[in-house]
Image 1 (cartoon, rainbow, N blue to C red):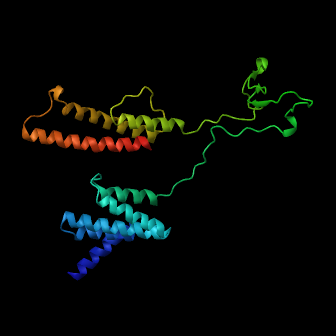
Image 2 (tube, rainbow, N blue to C red):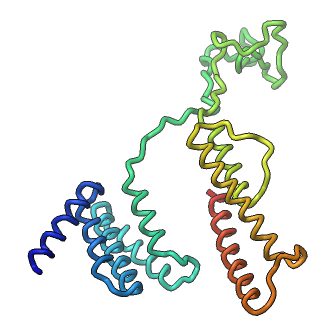
Image 3 (tube, rainbow, N blue to C red):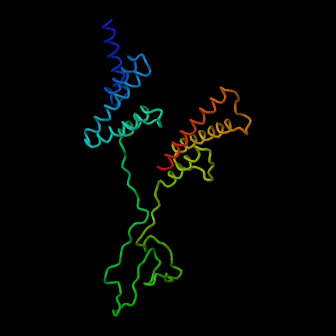
Length: 255
């Protein structure tokens, strides 16, 4: 029996090594799942291991962060807002361990090249007005645009400030439309972002469709709302879930 247990443990660890970037942590989690007999005890064990892993990770950064985590975790345990506390903590930990690719942010309105101090006219000097140029449009000292004739254009070789459009503006618009689609709000534009972004938008739009069907199901005027005690309990449960759903969507909108 001991030999069989040893072989099973070795095979389990080998499986974790081949599948997980953190084989030791995955092995501990797998053992906790396989050895527990109660769903409640398993959840408590998972949460304890998860907290230990987060604390050990924060210890390498700052002791102050560990204290802040303990304070927030204590408040979280006494709150009933999150129903899947362990799953959300595990997700946040996994996201923090994912290597972030640094992307250079393009500047929307770069600082223009200012003219030298000698080109600025002072009262009593040789020049009676000062000029600043944005693109090919000249402005006098009173702030009025000076007519530049037919050559008044934003040519690349005659400008000292370029209006740079962010490369991901379409992706950001698609994400914003997807958040609205999650609540069944129809948008005018069509998502023309990358293929993964389009697939994500399609799934969330389907989620918004299901949201509309649920709202219709619990609407007394639709004629679809079930009757009786069991029906009332089902409707109350759906309304509670929709409340949590709206809270999550509001959080996404704020971000």
